[in-house]
Image (cartoon, rainbow, N blue to C red; front, top):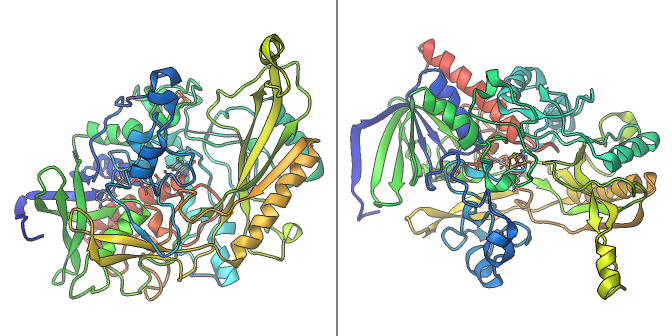
Length: 571
Ligand SMILES: Cc1cc2nc3c(=O)[nH]c(=O)nc-3n(C[C@H](O)[C@H](O)[C@H](O)COP(=O)(O)OP(=O)(O)OC[C@H]3O[C@@H](n4cnc5c(N)ncnc54)[C@H](O)[C@@H]3O)c2cc1C
Ligand code: SF4
């Protein structure tokens, strides 16, 4: 960028730099600051502090156009992110990156859903938190898929304990080996129809457990943990607008305030990291280069350790753009795996139906989660489906619909709509995607964005294993609706593009061998020891569980390791 001056001053020096302030970056910042490191968080988007949630207290009628974003605006600003047509509304569009500002190319369709502001997607996430187990950590090795995870459940288990306690995860213990129990706050209980569904399914399929979704919403306030910073969930169901009570976990409500209170935190918003600079003499990263989006100035900032938490795709793009004589294909990319093995969960398949009975109860919505059915396929000999490897879980809910009969008019219709409608169930499967070298993202060095940074291209797709699994996921959903005596059962299998499940991961994977992986078992680059990647890029396989709690556990573990290495004089 010839017109920009490079502001290179040693005043710009910190103990640690964290790139990105979303779920994993917020956690890294809190852990580093708490351990006494002067930490700079670099965030490409605008500043947001807790409480700055412009639509949180608005009702539908207070929002423009009754919460609907016009077709023209969606086509102009959200032409890639709105393709599933459920995501962009007046209540939350300020949390969604505009494709017109920052778009990407696709060899095959990829729905890259982003939020560029302090807090990242921790503000809009669905808050589901499920532990991984050795079924997940051992699968690649047993099935000779991708590379072996360099860790097992016992390595991460204490970090799940620590992180869940801070985050506040509500849930019900079920004693399942495949999705282990955690440090739970009391669950948001199943409603009467969901409880009935749980019991009827268990009678026919004892291995299929319908449990309250495990979510990062404070069902209980614990003064010793939440210290007046956060409050109990009011079940308003408006979480993705931002919660004024701080009742669900986000970087702005939880981790960044704790980091700030240590006095060690600096947040620099409107700062896009374009690359990490490698110093071949020390064999370490010396600094990062940022572009200030307001002044367009290019600035170099130095630190002893660097945590990459710009999200799977953001981090991978930075590393691919960090080219030097020592690393011509991107920082730490001697294996050639950087940008490859892109995974997500595949979804867009499930079933729905009318649940009979319960006419004398009146229950509708207003709890921040429905039910979850953990993976039950291919977990042991009795649950084997030979057609495919791995499995899927479901998220769903049962709620009372409006009574709005088609054939009535006038007064008859008016009388009818005052009576509650039937209970309806809907459930959607989240399936595992296998790591595959051919599923990838890469940079287009000939096509730059408005800041002069190379743009991203995606080339990933669902393959045979996923396609076979989808059919089984639909079949199993219908079986469970039948087991509960549901009526008007319908199902769908509308293949979605990778990215659409918003669990993209795997493009800088952990592994035991530096020839086939980018990171070691501490999320540390094999070849650049002061650079850590603890967002979804590090994942070696995708599991079926929503992944963010695992990113946080790995982050806390990696900071602890980095701290010990520094204290031992090794870093
Ligand atoms: C609607 C929705 C529902 C979801 N539901 C769930 C769920 O139920 N459970 C679950 O586990 N996950 C869920 N997710 C996914 C979850 O949000 C992500 O897994 C998680 O936020 C990833 O954390 P991260 O730290 O890697 O990235 P993010 O939270 O995306 O944060 C990355 C940050 O880095 C910044 N950044 C990017 N590039 C740069 C750069 N070059 N320089 C500086 N800063 C940069 C971004 O602006 C952003 O603030 C959901 C996501 C959405 C959108
Ligand atoms: S449901 Fe709970 S966490 Fe969500 S917005 Fe309401 S009070 Fe906040």
